[in-house]
Image 1: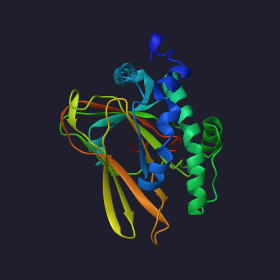
Image 2: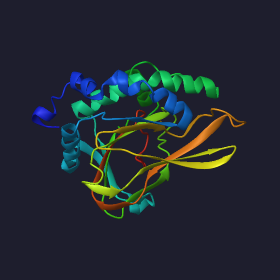
Image 3: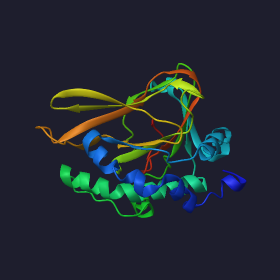
Image 4: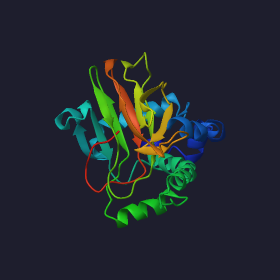
Length: 250
């Protein structure tokens, strides 16, 4: 973000997010459903300033037109390093909250990987393995656009949780375009639609989570976006592992 938008401070992020209240029930929801709503994570003004970045091509390393790759319809752009300051700070702040949950999940799944407390150290691990391309991205959908169910896996190192923040106002900027998650467990498949308002975020499992009950040890997860009926929908996607190769995303 340029000018005053670039100068949004970490204190503003944490004030807008009301961290303690927002995260109080998030861990329990993640354990139960594989996703958690973070209401009013960003203000409408912050959302507008972030969405305005989409036309600033110098901010991004690549643009993906989804129909060309059978990912759905619509498009998205991956940010370049250095990330816009506000996005970088938000990414670090979210990671700090999610790392303890990710570590608990891996212990439950018997995965011999633990994540450091800070994002800088984790990204150093990614970069040493050749995963050097930044993965935070901005998505734009118009009428008739959608995102097929998928998982965001970019290399050997995968952080098991990610975040999507809705920057547009449902019913005002667009209609349709619901965030959808599906899971597969011993009893069969299920789907979950997460209702989001402008500024809300959803935290969700990248590819799997521990099972709460039943015979299955884990639940396989995918996510996508239903068809946008009208208008334009912008989303900020926050993935915490970097990528080895350019590929599909949230």
